[in-house]
Amino acid sequence: MGTGTGAGGGTIVIEGVGPLADVLRTADIAVGCPTTVVVADIVTAAMPFEQITDDEFDAAWEQPMQAAIAAFQRAHHAQHQRLIAIVPTIGMSGAPTLAHVAATAEAIRVMVKSAARQWGSDGMTVNCIALAPALFGIDTTAVGEVSLAPPALAGPGTVVGDVVPLIRMIAGADAHHLTGATLTADGGVWMTA
Image 1 (cartoon, rainbow, N blue to C red):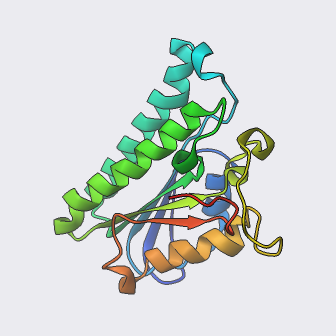
Image 2: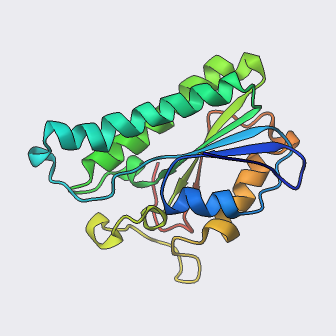
């Protein structure tokens, strides 16, 4: 977890582990409202669904979900006005040998909707940003990308160039009506629902 004050004056807390969370902690993110960003703790190793052991399931699904729930609760307790979860798009499309990743990502997206409904009356908006799996270190050749985007638009993008501006937008005072939404930010690599 990292805490800082963005250039816009609002406090920002980055929750989660891994390279994506680390980059966000070092980025200059100007936020207008107190904000918590929860980066999903995704186990990226491919595991055939029928061979996942109880211990692997615990590490790949139970522990990341418990971490996300605790992070959401801390954001609410801190009375942050914005909560943003970041997940891979794989949750919306699935992938062979990555059911555990898809299940975690999609469960967090559903939790975003429930938290948005429950905490809206407390003045909190809760949204999700879905990113290309490559930004989570997921091997995209195993995933099987579905892209209709021109090559200039396709690709996972960058955290600082593409993700940080979305966080700034969602964490701004003008985004008070945006809640329970998932913004897919992957350059059109994944055409998902």
